[in-house]
Length: 452
Ligand code: ZN
Image (cartoon, rainbow, N blue to C red; front, side, top):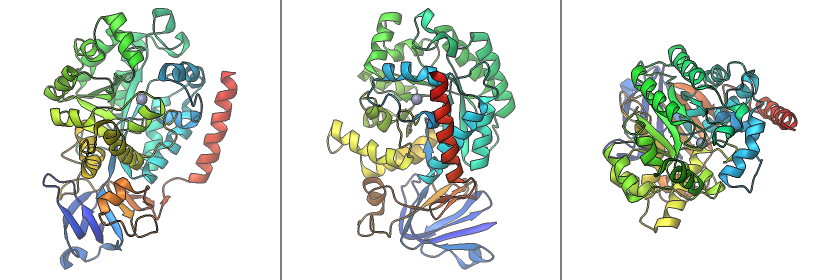
């Protein structure tokens, strides 16, 4: 099927950062076949569904590089806590999840991501209760139903409280079970083919919930299987202290000796980095998922996104789990990335277009998919967003990119993923939002009740 979107401002985020004040994008099946100024050429319009997008802005679909979908059903708890306090409050609630709870949570979180302009998302799932069933399969099923391109990360924790870690012993797994479960998840779900809708990554949770043995074995497994590596790193000063006391170095020094740098690795947060660490991430092309709202919600600080980009590290944006970012809106992260960068680093710290780049091509680089997504160019996958800029909120904002980044989150006219409609006129077309909201609230109540 061929689709034409025309009459809108088009911001391609291609290597030349081409923008058309009025332009067109033509899609055939799951690929972009033409992008240019003005109306689409007549020969491409024949037999196509044409969307007159006057008053709108077309951008590449946004790429979310860090999330915990299951947390959608545990929002609004420990709302004034630090990371470590928040985690210790929530671990017992999370211990109650099962595949049904994860399916509801993931469906809600993914539908909301789509509503906020996201077309590709990761997930980092690290809670596998022994009686919970197939929680990883449940979130992949949810992504297939909602229709987003999905990079689920098979997470893990094996450093329980009795061993000096933070999580209670009943939410951690045995190292052998982690490696077997992760290997099976790759075999079952990972699709390395071009245009893939599901790619699995290996993702032990964090230095304070995972043993060094697991970190090292996970890196070996990922490289043997040709998949990417993801973990949390340098999120808070508490973590920096933990690493100094327990391992005698910075978080990056600790994980680098376990094999955790390179262009197949990306870290969530990377807030507390010294100059040496910033340089090292750049030299090794190690990626960062910058999560400005979550870091602010937990009072952790804000990542040195400008320095990391200048050093050559790929930087994408992430909403992080909805339990530490109740809004869980990807377009809001673009705005927060810009505002927090300037609040911390002055007016030159990040440009409006630099913020949009992180959410698009930057995220694609972090996930190793810059050849397929993250910009609007012929041959790339048909993942795009049509934002409405002709309502009261934005109509008189001179620059459409400034309207998107500095204005309030615009209504979404259309979201296409792999050429398929996922959002039309502000509504998710693939799942029922209202019934999902009701079911999510039910699951939330039952998890809190179970945790006592
Ligand atoms: Zn996280």
